Length: 181
Image (cartoon, one colour):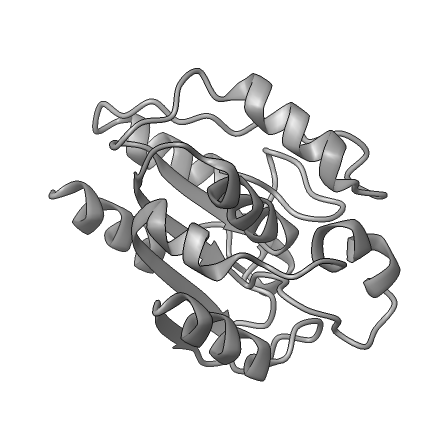
């Protein structure tokens, strides 16, 4: 699980989801990505690779906001196919706000959609209809490019702790379905 800009492994719904999955016998890794207030794709990729013990057909990637973008960049480079990827309020293009300069290393080059899709069995996007940072149209475009399902959450804002998302049962249930539980 990857946090976004300014995030930590202890924010939002991460501790809750980690506990929910670990109680069912799954290993969950939630790394602290470096300089989260000033993210850099190269540094985040290195940190993510160091924290992931192994990636195989049972791996599930979950990313919130810029952490979702990191998951997409990881999928571009994998040599295997993972089970699933869940993108929660992901950044996929210029947003037209103050965060654009912070996310530029992640989105300043085109995504390799075919490679991403070839490296994951299932992709799901979760986005709110009122996200204050990332327009819903971006989530729709991303889901279209990925042939992914899009779940729109009414009034969810950025689907983070500030929006009341200390738990996220809808995401947990989607992850468990992908595992076959």
